[in-house]
Picture 1 (tube, rainbow, N blue to C red):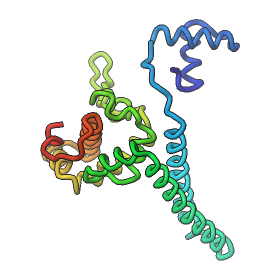
Picture 2 (tube, helix red, strand yellow):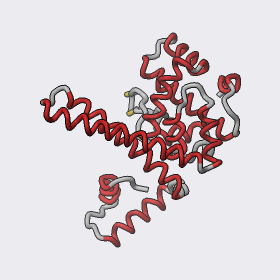
Picture 3 (cartoon, rainbow, N blue to C red):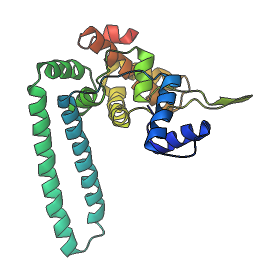
Picture 4 (cartoon, rainbow, N blue to C red):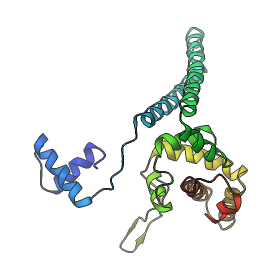
Length: 241
């Protein structure tokens, strides 16, 4: 459906609807859904939502750590001591969150099996696998183009008339894309399939960023196929993905 207020406002104005009431809002949304017919997706269950909330909190703690570290160099001694106390608390809180995440995964046989499957891929660690579990339940249920578009690593045309703009990625699920970026960065060094794929693109003249995004898409395609088939990492099969 419409993702934010600005999108809603544009959609309403496009139909000539300038007034705004609850009844009019419902009519505009119903008309939008009738025309666009967005794909229906099941809401995540309570356990998955809780896992996603824990991962979101983990990202917040890491961001706070980074901010406090940046303040240390410029802080006077009295303030520095308080920052260091806060940093110690943040480190302890991060450890508690990781333990909580471990417990949640261990309590679910399905999650344990899928995490083991995902982490069988060189370059995939706990952060990436758990982000997939919580933020991308569609993994293994969609085809390669659909999953790439959902995550936001599918390139889209930017053409108009005779102008042929650079194809670019946008949209999608930012937490998944950030985790995938880091995983692909590691995989370009330590995963033999992704390493060869990345080096082949660089040798063909592709810019590092373009080659890395392609590696992200390749890695996501491999993970999607593995989850769909329920089989762990197999380099020969992954090479064909």
